[in-house]
Length: 231
Ligand code: IMP
Ligand code: MG
Image (cartoon, rainbow, N blue to C red; front, side):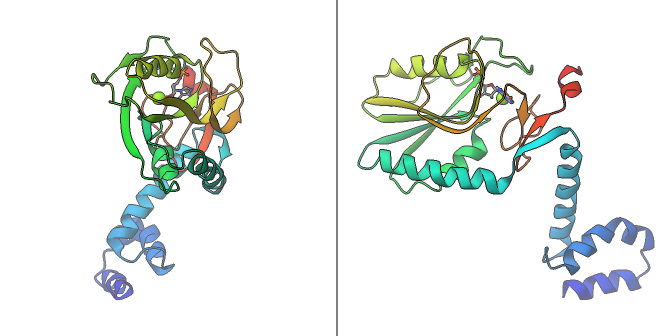
């Protein structure tokens, strides 16, 4: 049916449009996309990913590597929190992809809440000034809290979140990060679960941003240094 549509498009002589649509037709004909509309979206997404890939120095963890690690982390967390009142606190926005993929692997009756904080304010270095963008602190009194964040860098963010949540008197607090940078930290933070240890480099993708970009890259990579220095 889609093939018939593409043939009809060819016959009706839209040669310029067809040139533009060639990658879409190839997607349809390779059966990766079931309609021209879907193919258009896929081609645009492929172009976007290729464009963002060019801004990376190198890829650190591809999708299969991330998912394999999440399988192990989820198994460990599921085991540790069996028969406990687990509340996951996701630190937005960086942890979005991580939280979505990890929690779907944890078959426990957990609760999910979110916190929105900022300490980078669009820069590549933490300002140390952690602003809570969400006014109300989640009610976690008496619960076993697991804080999920994308990355541990200076330690300012997780130290401030931990201190704030402790005021609500949860039963326990643990911290889980996808990435932890190997570096001297401004604040010490005890981390209970770590996906990957990485060098002290600025990374993007899989939720992590630089100036709000690259979050939708499906893998994690090191951003080219000259982009960090650009205005
Ligand atoms: P910290 O307060 O310096 O530990 O930084 C925590 C927050 O800074 C993380 O939750 C991230 O949102 C952001 N961050 C730290 N390092 C990176 C990085 O390499 N890439 C993207 N964001 C980062
Ligand atoms: Mg960020």
